[in-house]
Length: 223
Length: 67
Image (tube, rainbow over all chains, first blue to last red; front, side):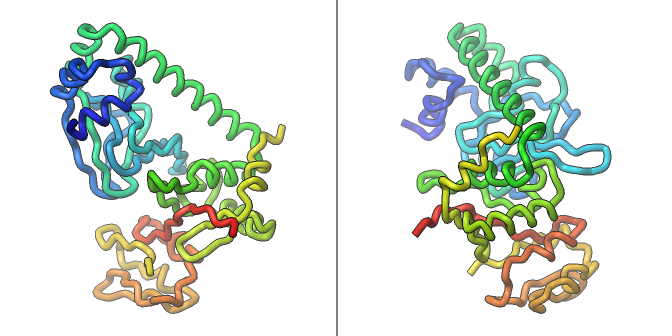
């Protein structure tokens, strides 16, 4: 089985598809490579494809009028982006940038429409994917509204803990600030606090989680 | 040993990072920053913090070590 087929079979968009149907879909998938820092999407622009991250990590973010960056999510292998504009025909609501070397798989809008017509189960899968997206955005609103910055930073560390199977994204303090919706200096102070509490240890190019349970307790919402 | 990542395309040679590095780990060569710090770098991130161009970054791996 080729890589593209394996990839599609694991995607929630194509859950329940037979190998023959996956083969049909894979004919419509193109590959795109991005270097670190390269943009995959620009906010307000019209992109004509649905993208899946095959390798690497893509940062989805918005920039405020004052130039402040808010990271909405980090998309890892298997995850998709630009799905909302594909279905509402609007401009991209976010910017998407490669955090390192990235390989994307894409499906052009006209091909998506063909897949939608050919395979009714695809519509159900799309609804599930978009519903999950809404659930995630509600959780982001909750984080920004109700959690303290220390709690938000703790949550970022727990959620981005490197998995042995899939390498996690390498995050700068500026990235963490953009994810937590705060200033870099505040993240720096929060990391210092977590280190003083012996929950983490700051090492050269590593943040080592020394007490995962303790960190997870901080993640509980503080209403 | 990993070093801070420098994007020479973005670096405008302002030298702010060279000035803030407490370990003399950076210098400008032909108006582009170069890392010379070796093991002395503590990954404090001050260079990253002052760089308006985002040309130098100190990214972290997040790992579990409860030993």
